[in-house]
Length: 387
Image 1 (cartoon, rainbow, N blue to C red):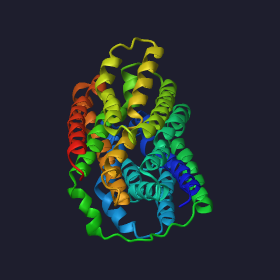
Image 2: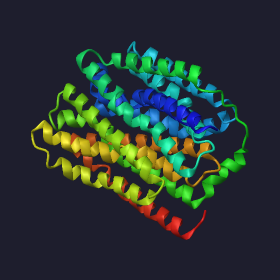
Image 3: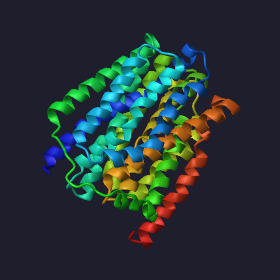
Image 4: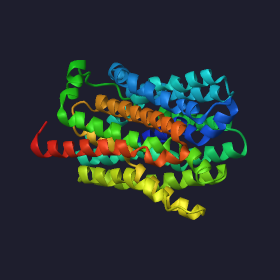
């Protein structure tokens, strides 16, 4: 495939990721408003994030194995179509149980979108270029945190949380049109057997990479899932100020995601250790924030830098151990990454309910230790084996 086509697919994929992630994580900025609207506690409102992620974790790999035989372009469009339907009906603020079902609906093809677009964009490219192209696509996560998530949070703080779904739906619609007009059809040229793809599950390096992905993301989402509530109740920030913090957080994440994309292909273990360090340093950094918004902004900026590449790091560790089954490996990365989101949100919510919102930055340290252990295991495997 021509490299220019690879890049075009990567940038279109990035736009799609912005739309998807703004729907998935955009709820973080409006959780307090949703909790107030439905008269529920913040932990219950957090199910909108944790159950979304848990459903992806449970169904993702199976769906990707099934749809891998179809045209990648069509699967991507179907995936975005489900997100559009979900956003449209969520605008009308249905009962909470129905809002939950609407949240879960697009999870059916969520991992398929990521798997298909990464596989298409990185086809017939070198290992180092694959990491760069993947960083463009995964960069959509950080860009969503720069653009749509703070913007929708700001709009929700002025008007109503339902408008966030209107904005997200518009982005999804634009992406659908762009994919239809500018992305080439990509029928599957070689249907791999389920047995061959499932074989990656027995590889020690892949198992280690999966564990790194799971524990690193869990560590971060113990705190990030309650970003708005923590800054509001513990640091006294207004909804508008929180939207500015989300913007700062996202900008720092874009920068660090770009840098990590350049470094992971050369220094995977050291790059991972550097960004993992943030899970240990963040709670101590928050202890030095005073009553000024400036000191909080410095720590939030640091938070964004260290958190930014966590999904890209997961992709790097898992796909590098399964280059012969990229789509399935990507689906597992998405599934275990979302399992990490779900676990982090659930564990963080439990600790908040038990000990109060002030404990939020500290909860992820335990998972950070687990991530450190499996990173060292992966480093040992890289040095002593070829599997």
